[in-house]
Length: 117
Picture 1 (tube, rainbow, N blue to C red):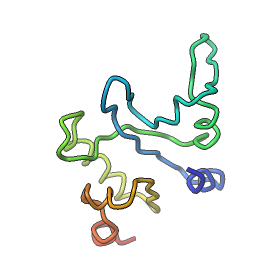
Picture 2: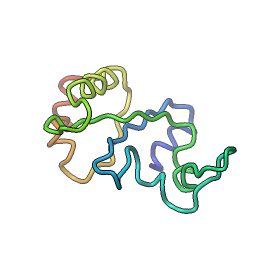
Picture 3: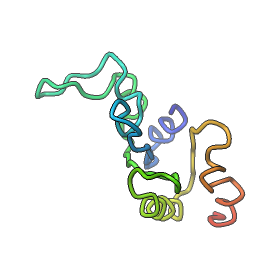
């Protein structure tokens, strides 16, 4: 999160791709949103965590299902959206555990061949 915060602070447009919820206890998006303390909203409800707000200030976000084998969401449509974003991106920063991007079909070799700039 710190690398993309720095890019954002320097003026880059940063779009954070977050995953859909996998279970009722796991809502969509970054789980760090729900850490305490959470910021109070004008209507009295709880907003994002202070940690999340600090590291993600100014970033845009989108929830996409990138796992083609998932029954949650619309993997084909979401992957098409992601690939349209990749076609315009100058930089891709990922925060998956080792090998996940490869498993999703987006290894460095695949991305570099398809989007050489």
